[in-house]
Amino acid sequence: MSSDILNISLGTLIETSSLFDIQLDDRSEIKNLQNKYLVRTLQENTSKKLTNSDYFKYFTFGCMDFIVYEEDKEKKFYFIEINGTGMAGISNLPDYYFNIITNSISQNIEFIQDDDYPVILVPFSGTDCYKTSGSIKLVYERILYAQAIKNVLREEFGKSTILTFKNLLNQSGFTQDIPTVVMGYVKDIYDHIHAKDGRLYLFNRPVAASLHDQFCCDLLKKFQSQIDKDSFVPINGINKLAADKGVSYQLYNDLLSKKSYNYIDRQVIFNFAYNKEDLFKQVLDNIDAGKKIVIKPHSSELGRGIEFFVSKEPKYKIIRKIEESLKYTEQFYSPSGNVFPYTISEYVDGTTISNSTHPLKGHKYEVRIVVYRENNEIKSFPSLVKIASEKYDPKNISRYMLLNNVAASTGKKKSASTNFSLPACNYKTLKTLGFSKYHLEELCN
Image 1 (cartoon, rainbow, N blue to C red):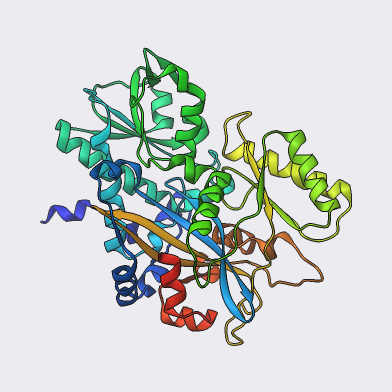
Image 2 (tube, rainbow, N blue to C red):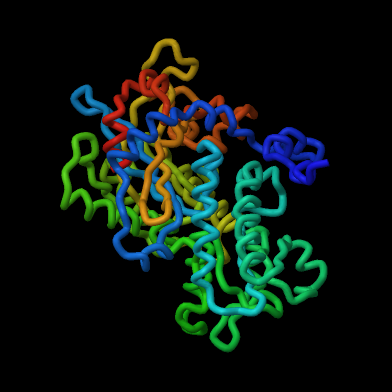
């Protein structure tokens, strides 16, 4: 009998997950509808070669999200954010591309310090209650990353293992000297890391690297003066860019000041708020000046912490929305006292699906472009159209009309993620949205 029977397929794992009182999210419908010919055509015209191999350790993968709006009856794109390795959703890509990204992650293990028994962290956002942690429905992506890293460690050191932080905590630390990948919630792991002799430690073992951009930024910020340079490796070297929306806005605006595009020409108008008092003041000042704005924490999932101020509201409601944003961000994502800086940015009124035959006609949406490294090339893949859960009504605006987040939409409506998403690299989707492949090509560029 073939030993392959001992390897559970991803489809089997997702289908049987309800046996463990959780339903993992199946993205196979989206990934199977991605047009492989179209993505190859796009990549032939947009891929960029890295001329210096030293750059490899600075980039693994990430994604860029764009609001779609209309100007003079032309579709245009407004940059929202960059997400890095802390985000979920790579399973929207066909298996071939998912494997490339997973291999890219594992390749970066070669940059870790020479430890006899290295510890690599693969954390994910949320809390220990999956009902309040949307990312758990795609936790299998993190498991596959951890498995790829484990395989590389085994090839290098002859053996390796994966531990959950919960089991590690129950046994009061590591019980055997073996290269180890540790998985668990960001906040749990963060609270048990300390610095000693120029290194970061989890219990009694030095931590060599981690895969989660915001988590890496938080660790480096907390322990920067206590650890030696290069003793801890963020597996995705663009962690600061992916973890802080304001930093990505600065880079994006700089790009638009130097290059011109047909469908992308609107810089992001934004400001930072570095503490609670400043956040309240800036929001109230902007509203008093008649401006429509969005506030965003530098770390979030499920759209938690993002609040829109686009219609007239009494002051007590405005204050309550800001307080709820701070509460959710602190509860689910950031270590205590580390939810800032916030960005306060201009609200851009995105367009809605206008195709009369689509069941979500009148809903706002945005487009996600996954960017990844394949050997010495940077490539893009238009992966997903994310659709708001409620039809837009300008006379009675609600948060869920403006929040184009698949996990938030499915959580709100208690339905499958495919009901609020479309494969971006698909000719039928382009027709539904009124795009051409040249729109996607410019985004990929």
